[in-house]
Image (cartoon, rainbow, N blue to C red):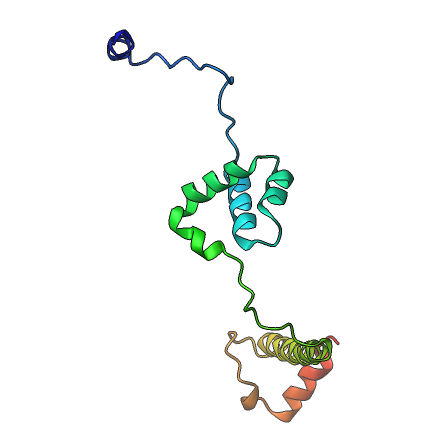
Length: 143
């Protein structure tokens, strides 16, 4: 009762801490990294906690504060993930994407040179250029 009266009379005074010297305040980026690591489940919760230098319950408290308690069902491990594509298929996709990148880079360079040549906006249509202008652009384009 006395404590309540003192707190009411002097609200600016702080509570006396018994035990630890105070709560450690972790940066928000560290807390988010911990929750992401906990939810992704690439490693165990204890490994994530050890890596961040905190204890496991702290990770779960951060998760509850940031995501709420209902997010726990989405963290369960699932074994119904699709199989990883074969290496050959990935190499084929890589080659296809590199070919597309080269094609888009060439088109980008041609449009930049056409813009410089014709002193128009970025809306230059390659279909409207004459063959002579196109050959000039290809000759000017870096390889």
